[in-house]
Image (cartoon, one colour):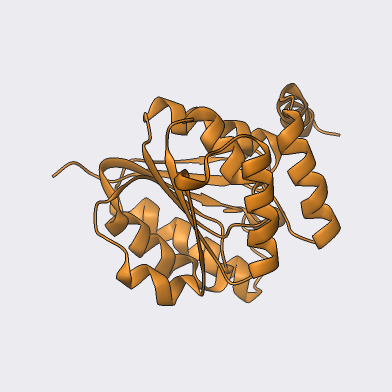
Length: 209
């Protein structure tokens, strides 16, 4: 193991997941849902807390791992989550209510993100997490920057896609989509950061106009 790989492993193992999140992660594994890593989850919690997020929207509900992490950092926030898989959303709702999140602060929308997002209000959210169908990630980011308030944060999970984005020999459609996204973000000059933890987390701030 290289020194850098050892550091990433140490950073991931530094995070101790609360029991409710650990249970949601175990359920994710049972259903074959790829959740964000503990290290990325801790970053989500930190960002939600540091932005004092009150309204959060995520694309890709999964079984609630990301939602639990974000609400851990912003315990008074309202969460809107979009996913096509109703059974996954049911698992997420059970995880959230089991963790004590009031039902009135959970809004789960069943549907395709590209169909739902055009109907969502502009500048209505403090934090946007994109963890949905990778083939639409560029389109989702455009929507995310519209939905988040000026000065708000948009996050893209799995931005390094299993290590393939950094490998120029990898040319599959998903890798190219993320690689293209990162190139476009870098070219815009928008305030952004790419964390290598987990499967990569792209972080952007919508400019204050």
